[in-house]
Image (tube, rainbow, N blue to C red; front, side, top):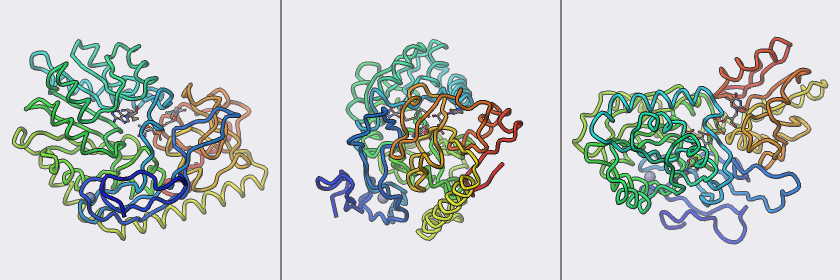
Length: 424
Ligand code: DWN
Ligand code: SAH
Ligand code: ZN
């Protein structure tokens, strides 16, 4: 057993299983319910010929018996995940760019109507949300440790700080820019193991009547859609309303609103304020009631989730091997971070899937982590098409299938693996 908060890998063997079972948030007992074995860093695409020394860790997730937060049992050092070359760019998905433009417009119409408001985004990436705020002439700052993404934001006219948001950086921002009326974060707050320090930072920076709004994958959807691949190094926590309420109350905040979102296969947007500053919306209690009936605090729900993942793995590998035995060709579509779990847990190799197509410039010409399957540009997905395409970006199925109509029209078939393995 280790102290709460001490989640570094134990001993010199990085592949060794860390011995830990205490909640990062409350110190309660975390019971492991699923493990995916030795895994690479999900967004660490490799340069061909330079694959020596690739970093691996043991991927397992557990449920805290006290505060109900689902969390990983091992932590990858943050500088190894988020740095100059972190390749993910929000703008590569048109539907996400549109989604964040609407988020910004709503803030402009609701929270940001007073004199000289200030907005901070945690994990601003290439600036897709803040661009609309910047275009409206509103004071803002994006905080993101990935310098390549932050520079892309600056090119879009967004003010960015290359840094990890936590208590110290938040205090420095408050000193320089004053209090923030809105602190926003999407698909980032749950990526931060030291989440208590982030909330202390929000406490430093948020205006008394301000709101901290964050969007994250929703645990209920992950369980219902059996999306085991949403578990990977960057997704340190998997949120539900109950665990989020426990978390924010522990740091002196109140959860005042929750909305369900369709993005990324199912997400939730949480609004947090200082106690008494906002009247809580009835949605909070409604979500809590629904979650109780879904068993999101019961270990049995997650034991079943782990069993579901095994079935998907076996079905997918059987399908891929059968198709290859019949001489069919298969390529991957979308070199997603979550595909690291799918590919390395299932054991998908270049014999089954010789390459994966992806629109992100910084992923192209590189090798997928762990499996070393090459990544090619979308131009490699053109006539003569492969017989099948395995859609790792299943959360963008609508956008991708619309873009690649010609593939299906010429007889190509998509393979999806959530909620079950199926061909369309
Ligand atoms: O939470 C996170 C989200 C926001 O993004 C991060 N932890 C990392 C990352 O996760 P992901 O890589 O699983 O996210 P996406 O959005 O499923 O990635 C889609 C991938 O597919 C990107 O590499 C872009 C690519 N893509 C493409 O090649 N053609 C996407 C679309 C829509 C397309 O048409
Ligand atoms: N908000 C974007 C990007 C999500 S990817 C979207 O929803 O599409 C996660 C981002 O969080 C990366 O750009 C990463 O560099 C950033 N990040 C990771 N840890 C962070 C921290 N402590 N503070 C601020 N950003 C962080
Ligand atoms: Zn806990």
